[in-house]
Length: 406
Image 1 (cartoon, rainbow, N blue to C red):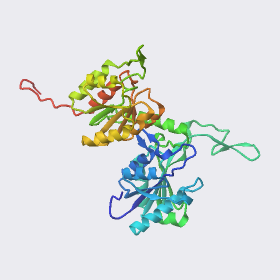
Image 2 (image 1 turned 45 degrees about the vertical axis):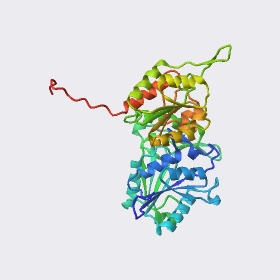
Image 3 (image 1 turned 180 degrees about the horizontal axis):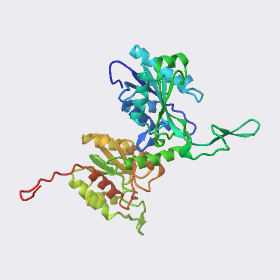
Image 4 (image 1 turned 120 degrees about the horizontal axis):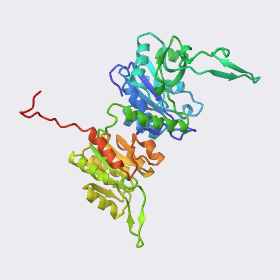
């Protein structure tokens, strides 16, 4: 999305559909946002960036890029295989951009989806360094104090970058720097001339270790998901959830997912009394609530009546029905929370800006959540969600009475 008439800085985000390690990795959610969305957001929030384009061969990734406010360029098959380089994708996107804009940008940035914690300020600093003429290339690195070793063809082990006979303390060693792979700001003219990302005057932009995580394996994705949830919790206002409505699943959220069967086949479930208080307080604050359930059991409707909450049950396609409910009430999906626990909630979770999961949710739901609650389903999770929403509500202004002194 262009921020000005003259294109000075183009960010290219390569995002193939194919991935051997993690199928459709670039669409995987981390804290409720896909890796594509996180990359696009970081680029759009950098003040110096004028245009953002996602280069892809997959229609789902293309749609996600457009939804997030980026442009999209369709990458041909010959540039989409496992052996295709990131440079080839950037050159192809540059050609497409020049055809549309009539000229090249001054700076082109290669930005990778696999780095989910890119700080826009870091990206902006690297771009500014190149724009100001301080470098032809500026890329993200993290400090490393590791002792590296290599094994030669003859099997001999040798130290790399340090003297094996001298082991200074970490704080006494000059740091080395590891590429994070997150972003590379390149002077466009030099990049076209050399055809690769390292040329001319190089500069390093050091990012904090917590921003340098890269996703290459399912284990990396699990780690990043946990880190993202912790970051969301620790962020300013992280204890609160600033939304205009709360939608929840029923089984495994209001209940502990256990069912007691009587001899005549009647089902009984256990709910948490504290949830009722949380719902009552949220209703008094004027926040709309909805229970959206696949189940057709009368107990769902009975619990809804008890809580005074609207219920939609017997819903197989929760995502579509949730979107209809949001639209009918004129709500912004980004300001709606959905609390789920299982795989059939993931679609609905992707529909809103605040997907939540109970503490004992399935891994698929936990991965899709922007925040995983500390309480389990049926053990106060709904109450926790309500309290977090209330914590973010504007506090009523208290006026002093005539007898008070200041």
